[in-house]
Image (tube, rainbow, N blue to C red):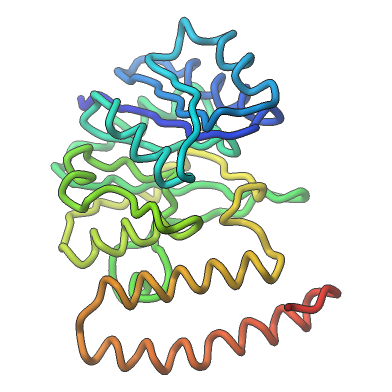
Length: 256
């Protein structure tokens, strides 16, 4: 069975980091290592990490250039065959889930993708992974909290693009799709819970506008097909006004 590297990227994450750490170090009957990349937090995050450092394979706390840069640092330290990113707003569902996931990773795939739960204030919503296909041209079919990626894949695809603040994972999976990377999906197991507190979950208009701008950048920088570029031109001409109108109707705060 493959060895797994779990990487947590965090910054000023004192509210949730301990639950994230405990969900990882409590895993049973599997071979894994745990790496934490902290962006020089100024709250109690480092103190919480230090309390558990005997069960953490490696951790650092230093300034970085953003989430993508921190994720790349984590990959550089990784010794596992597969890498899973579980950030400080996320946690594994129970102490047996990693061994259950590994037991399903028998096919020689570059990515093994599992379902996750998206946790809001009031409920948990199933986010089911999808195979690469039409959807990938517009939105990510995979949530990184449920995606075990071969470490070699990061070198093949050039890691995470540090110019992205939100859509770095979408660009990574988009490039994987373009390179015809083999992904096996597993919809019979929920691996982790993703809280709605992360940067990619923000629903204010400035954050949404930045996310859409980065998604558009993913499309324009990673697809040279004349047909797809024409489709994207129409898509973004219509999609942005639609999302702005939808936001105006659903939110009391007017977009800027």
